[in-house]
Image (cartoon, rainbow, N blue to C red; front, side):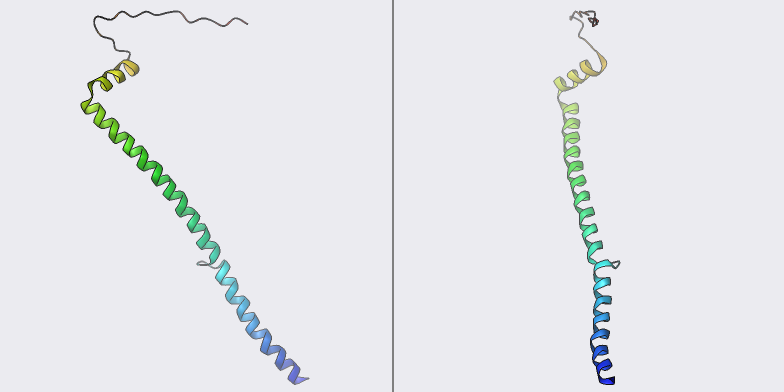
Length: 100
């Protein structure tokens, strides 16, 4: 009888230790689930960084165009501020009202 309990303990104690180690390997602060979450966060941040880089490049090109391209500067002035040249005539048409 005593020998049987000793054999059970020989399996239960290492088994409990193994379960304990596996639990912290998966669910601990530096476990597999945390590593998976961190990788997902890293991928999201890298995607945002790539978007920011493309936006940054676009803005750099726009700065260069504003500094050097007179036609681009004129188009911005016309579109945003409604500026016209002195020899141009402006025609304004009334907007059609929708009838029900």
